Length: 257
Image (tube, rainbow, N blue to C red; front, side, top):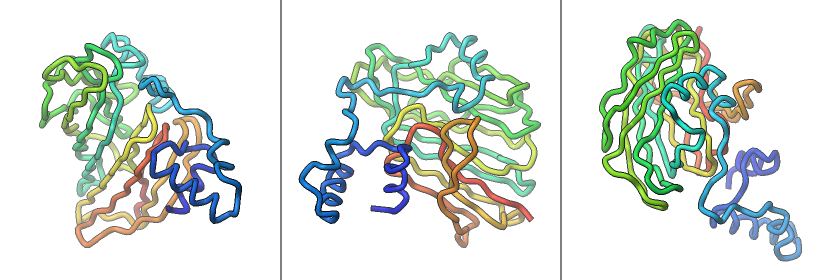
């Protein structure tokens, strides 16, 4: 178990609930010579209804998302939550966010769900009318709404079939951008907690940053908490992986010369 995970538990950023986590808690009780279940009984009870508690989009993306959600007639709870996901972000030779390739496994916690909302946050100066959603896997594009003022693009992914409670689907998609100013970082917003997440950032060899760090954020209005220094590999890439991503923001930021 990592020191970072223990720190997240201690600060309340993450709630241990997986079987592996509970076994680790039991092991800690032994190591600390505590009575059996002394730590486990302090944990808040988990929701056993199958309906996870989620955060509001506006706390993680910004207030500008509200108008786009209204235009798409999208409820706060779309009936799907992420089981696991990965992002591959490409930064071009001009230091711009060129693209984001994503894969997600989704599970329905409501019957009849047939669409999923995805959001792209452009860098300052992003030309949202030029941002497209492409390379769709197991879904097709529905309505797309854009806000130049907020630098946001929201798109519906229409699923191949309506899902029943407990059913899963895997979707893939790509946001093609490359229109904004120099990028300083990328983060993924988590409305729900405890899903595995992998993020890779690949830089053009002509524009490599001098320092990279992973970070978490409880909301867009709060300052980031830096969690680790990251090192570029021989391919100009780096990554982070979290087994149980907490609700909030998780990402990588970097400094240029």
